Image (cartoon, rainbow, N blue to C red):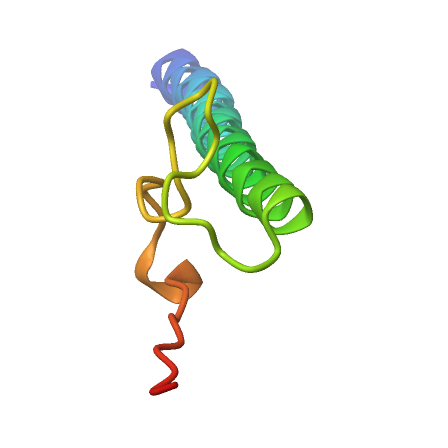
Length: 92
């Protein structure tokens, strides 16, 4: 009976170690996936802002055509709602 109890305790210990390793692996994989999503989002934001800044520097008064070579204007950039730009429409 004593040997059986000892084998059960060893099996439970090995099971706990395996579960801890599984949880560590799952946590690491989840963190890595979240980091990839974050970095791709930063890349998209950088691309959006470089188009916005380039257009503002080269066309500060808002020419409607945008870039002659790229054929993309400030309105064509897809951006999240927090980055939506306002437009002024003067009455003059």
